[in-house]
Amino acid sequence: MADTPPDHLSVNPESPFYDEAALARGVGIRFKGVEKTNVEEYSVSEGWIKVAAGTARDRAGNPMTLKLKGAVEPYFRDDADAGEA
Picture 1 (cartoon, one colour):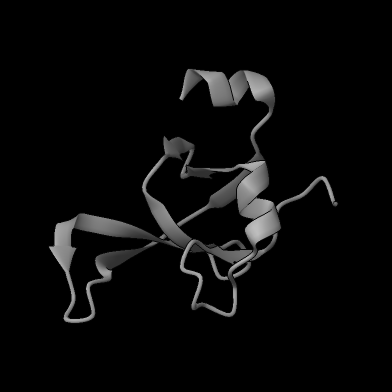
Picture 2 (cartoon, rainbow, N blue to C red):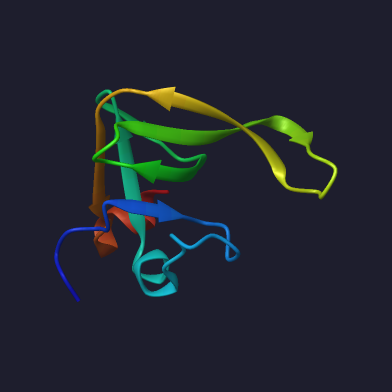
């Protein structure tokens, strides 16, 4: 597997950008230099992330999301980072 995470990744299994292997390896996101733990989907090339909007749900039961624009830096977590979270 490559050392860089995918350009576009989603945690929703119904999305065409879902990648179980990358998610199992552990992907961390820095957005505008700040570590984010509630990212539902991201795109590096387009410069946005989608984060859950509290506990709100849509009619299908999926979390409501907000699209935030800015610098996105995905990385694979190593074992030391995984232990801290």
